[in-house]
Length: 430
Image 1 (tube, rainbow, N blue to C red):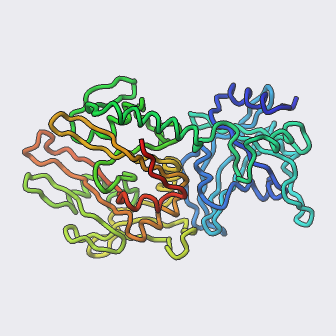
Image 2: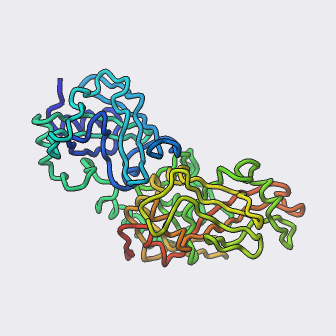
């Protein structure tokens, strides 16, 4: 039996564990052959929990693909569509949902047949609803044309001209933004706060190292570390910063000498000794600007800043030595996964450390960025705004950590340039 009302639909989604529900009004070109169109930018990735993005540069139309743990349901049954995936076409650019019917008996195949191009008339009354869970599943239900549910959804107060329309409280809603600001205001007003860290079992313990600003803020917000690359707080990524530069990402290279041999071999070969006997690999790397100390240069392949919305499927950020050998590589597919999933909404919190007491004060205003896309990240990198600023090292013989290695491959940006990464950016006073 079909689900007839939005109320019953949401109850079913909640029973399946869905925390976020959104829908798309379908047109005739949304079908099993043309796939489901999800948007003209990779911002659509922020809606779905997807697996590892893989590049396919040798196809007739090169693309990236990301698997989905995707299920169709009705009032009593749930069944997996085993071929479901997101396909990202950077040449256009656009994102489509593919393989969403494969191997699934309860999938609405009869409503996903191809319509001849000459008969297409735009939106046709079908509505596709998605619900996503904290453990990475996506559930789907189709409201067929002229059904009560379809009509109710299209007339729903949340309905808009957006391609993907939030039915539950939007991740980037003003309500969620205000709740975050209220929490940060309380932290601001009750500081300074002793350095601490929350662990995965929920316990909070004192933290003595100098880099406790982010850990302390997360603990105050009740954020425990987890292995999933998801935003920290109600859909928002939270970043504490103490200086003029902010660390955006710390991805390890997956190619070149570093990718093959690892951080220890890389620092041994390309690092320099400090006065204390530690061996470091450092240097602020901007694209196409050789560094003085290491003689290494950051490069960008497969992206033209004059065509900012497009990128090559086999593109990469990479580091070369003085002889031009690629010694560290970050391919676009691995960076895409992290950036779009975690940084769609981000709050940057100015932080002051009191070294005498090892306490932190979180200040005002809070810088808030909303809606990003990996192309904005590449644009800022190509223009020299984002800098690769590594700090990997091998501890020297006089250290209590002698012989151990620390990997630190960080990409950073100055606070004044943060706004270039987002569609909307504001400074919010506490």
